[in-house]
Length: 336
Image (cartoon, rainbow, N blue to C red; front, side, top):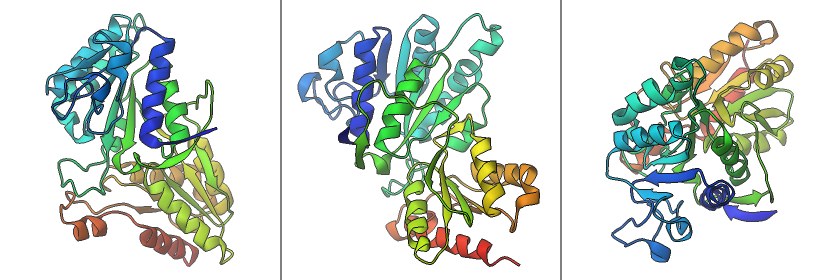
């Protein structure tokens, strides 16, 4: 196994798939030059350094710098996919989906259904999401709950470099549109990544920690907080199942319900706002399908229903934390 950063796993997987399949193309803002560079080997590869060197390696017809127009990027990706290509389109920040929702929601997500299965739309839409960088309310949001709610889209949220490689490779080879969400605070995270043609199937959650007292469900950056809490509590004799969702659509309902039927207690940790969110949806799923096993009501640990603050101290208070997760675990354990 090679050890690499999260961002390096993104870049290396894209490069490997472009090498393997000539139909794979990438497009987005500043993915060639960026920061005023002219492209080529000196290019930084966008603000996240996830496309560095691709232009020099694969050329202008397969690595396309676009205008600053998210609707144009998504429209081009839709057309490329219908024409037989496998586009990987990058939105610099997930917050910008608002100006391209028609292309994503009403077009890309619906092509196969509206055309009676006579066409496919193998487009991957990559987005950097999440708070923790003091980027304020317009550049820090977690929008997966919106995208998960759109039928026709697959939504992926890797939490570690190995899953970046396995899930991104699966996404690129999928014949349906995939939203691939990369938490910006994870780009510098390092971990071991399997060699070779490694893939991870969609809809299969990962059991990150095992225990019989509480089920903790999360994804992305917050999964690490959940693991920290589980590791701390095991010293007190409290065992936590920690479930990494990996994908929110399809959702591994079986893994969630099987765990809750053993533990009888569930906590869902999510970075999106609470109203009409993923955490509420999963809590409802547990209440519906595992009610007889519950020893306490399922709890959600989320930010408050408010825009994300800019100030460092306020942003820290806004986000779910290990302390908040631990408090939720102790609450369900003490429920009477």
